[in-house]
Image (cartoon, rainbow, N blue to C red; front, top):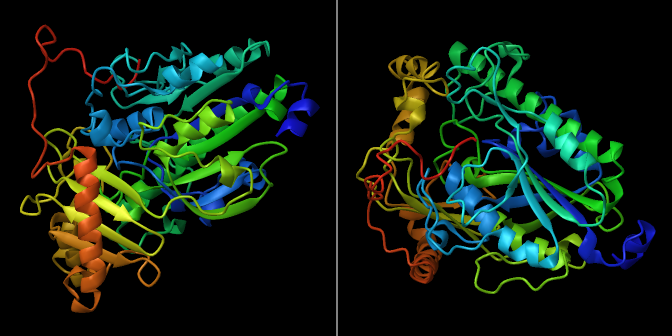
Length: 466
């Protein structure tokens, strides 16, 4: 690191800039660096060729706001308090701003925010980076785009006197996906857990179009860094908040919901085009950034620095990772907890008696399920495989245990297999202890509380866009 610092005229490793690009609702299997053969992500492929690729990176939650709050605080959802979607973190919660500013870092965000309150996340905001999509100016709803022009101007204004940590948070490929797909529906791949209908293929082609749209924004960011002479003294990370809005992904604790891409480009330090199986959590970003900036990682958070992995000294990090799912208001009321190591995954469904539902099968005001769900229902009456998929979607057992080496798609629940009683009991014990340390004693869905006095439901506790 010191040699590279001298090369770029820096006095110490504390002065490395950090840029984090966060995709919104992106499946780890749905980009070229992780093996997808259909979607086109040339900028991600380029970045992967210059980066260390993490094959085992996980979000703290399969839902936007809890996950983003964890990314910025280094705390798991029950520790920071914003474990339900659109919920604010607890008062006095510290975020990356509070850790990096004393190290002389400028901490800013462009694009989607979706965390709050302001006191916990006093990030500098790059104004003008959230724009309604053309045609939706009067009623944007979920139709927002990341505008990269202001990001380019912000980067151009960096003089080099103060290092920066910049988060660039895209709105893609979060629904609503582009109406006109760039992909042929007949050519897209359909996951084994999905029902292959014409409507599914059209929706998936739209989802892939949004991924390519996100990839173009990443390309603009990389071009800006090069244009303003920042590439050689800036660490670039690419990740996502959680998996995509598809069944058995977002709002679930299966790998498609919580496994995320993680690419790290660190010129002169990270060996280009390499990969690791080190098990990491996105809560680990905060302490890693603090340490590479020359500070001491805070001990009171859940995250652990994986700086040794980045420097090539280790290829292991955690023995296990956790994730939690609370819900999304009244739309999703099936809370769960996950414990995962390199081979096994354990899921505790806290309220299995409640029928599992999400925006995908219930929301009627926007796409992201409503456009293909009726075709799934229709298929279930004639196709036993389709009927089984729908049954599994709506019904969750009290416990789930999967051998990920033998069953990577998580289709065979071993929790009821006597041959795995030992593993099951070990996971139960670890989960109970972890929940105790988290202060997590929930036995059912989250309590829906009324808006604070004076708010009257007009101002969201966690702003979605600004």
